[in-house]
Amino acid sequence: MSSLSSFAAISTPPPSLKRAASFPCRPSLHFPFPSNNRFCRFGVKCSYAKASTKEDTNSSTIDVIADVKPERVVVLGGSGFVGSAICKAAVSKGIEVVSLSRSGRPSYTDPWVDQVTWMPGMFILYFEVVFRDVFYANWDEVLPGATAVVSTIGGFGSEEQLQRINGEANVVAVTAAKDYGIPKFIFISVHDYNLPSFLLSSGYFTGKRKAESEVLSKYPTSGVVLRPGFIYGKRRVDGFEIPLDLIGQPLERFLSATENFTKPLSSLPGSDLFLAPPVSVDDVALAAINGVVDDDFFGVFTIEQIKEAATKVRV
Image 1 (cartoon, one colour):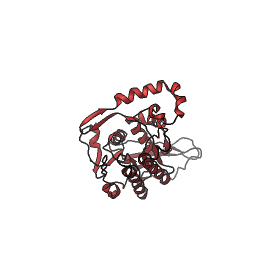
Image 2 (cartoon, helix red, strand yellow; image 1 turned 180 degrees about the vertical axis):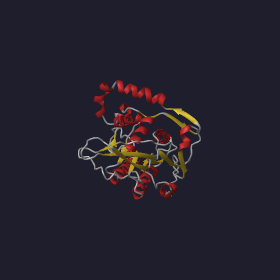
Image 3 (cartoon, one colour; image 1 turned 90 degrees about the vertical axis):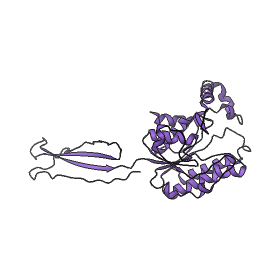
Image 4 (cartoon, helix red, strand yellow; image 1 turned 120 degrees about the vertical axis):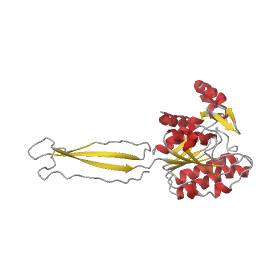
């Protein structure tokens, strides 16, 4: 994921000296990162000694300046509830962020907003879905240079719309990312709630699972599928803030405290509609960031695994 351009200036040891036979080179690494975190300097010191002595009499330094490319994440639906949390978490970790969404730049003025590149052009509307920009996006302006794509694309509507927005739109995004050589793809899916199979045949779930299959097929060792249940946090809608955490946080704590009593009920069909613990939008966002930065983090992740992944990058 990084490009390296370097130069080295090596001074030649005096003719009268030869490299000591025991352990002549003692490398030392120095990282004086400037403010843009793009360059680092490596200093390697090598010592030479006369054949008849063990003491170092001269040293030479190799300076290497490396142009290290930072993580660059494209968030599809970055101005939405989950998408904006992912953008914020990525910025907090020093990751370059590009958001592609229907509305482009959000109207609120949080400090992190100015650190995201906002690009309008992906139209996702509840009950009225316009796919022109999703299916015919100018990926040339979005994907080059990205190290990961995170998709929060999803919505509701008729059966046909559910299939298209939750499934086909994401399939298009996965295919585009793969064609452009993007190393990682993270998809925000949904918990199945232990529902009977006939309920899971609805367009919402079949669309999500179709997108999951595409991610895991095209990115078998670097694709991430997160399956949260009810996501809580402060959700902004049309200038208003809906405090979903007032419901989700107490419920999460209650279900955690009563887990030993409710666990036997988890095998009942549809039981997770009541027993699946809610998850913080911040945990979902941090789990997505863990997928960006951790090469060993791939596959399908449950609610509890999402929380564990979030813990790894929270510090």
